[in-house]
Length: 187
Image (cartoon, rainbow, N blue to C red; front, side, top):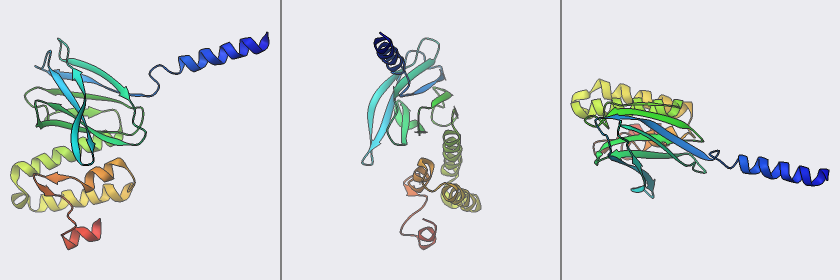
């Protein structure tokens, strides 16, 4: 009899652990975007593809869960087109919160929930500021930005954030280029 009770207890424990335990979660609010659709994209072999949609409710809120990847990945949430994209890393069973507005979706947003996500948001915001000025006009600011990125790569070279940084572009120009002798020494 004890054997059957033990088997039932183990089965109940196994079933209860199957709930949302293997999911990452995205939630937040997009002002002025009631009843719109966001597109969750993943990069596969260097090409971004839509892997799911995220519905924004009447109040501009959304709450989405998806099975966590086996390895760290970078996703992006897109509103309308790729110029309105928010990039974020998923390294485990995280819960990230994204808040923005429809008008400034890919530029004025907050991303919270993990240190890597916050770092990625800060990198993207600095890259956007340099893009608005132009690399040549940014001058010393661009050089300092690259030094900061090198520091982040060296702090954790095997992280998903290091991968993101090494592949980061400002416009169509890679931040770190194998053709640039100075960059080759870094990467």
